[in-house]
Length: 120
Image 1 (tube, one colour):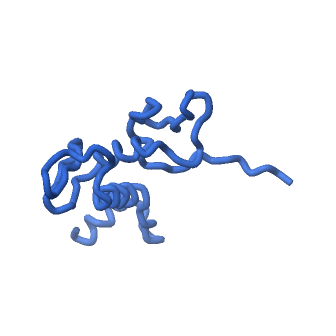
Image 2 (cartoon, helix red, strand yellow):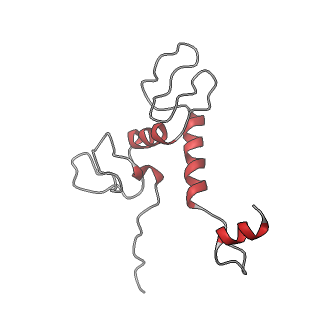
């Protein structure tokens, strides 16, 4: 039996520095002593940092722009942990849209030319 090599998971939050373990963008998070890579997940703080840098918060009363932390819709104070669930979902949708594009039609080799010929 041939062993199947373990592939690096596709975590969109790898695009930012991890504020917890300080792993560079593109690198996996590490254990608390920095000796072992976390292959199955990333630190929650990294996911939060990525969501803050990626998406505008759609939560009414917050609407924080990319790069700005979420705020409480009732008090206006900055959230001390995490982001609104709607912002995390918006960041995930943005990552999915940019990484999963539908295939071109069978007779099309260049999408720009195809759109121009169709009048788009």
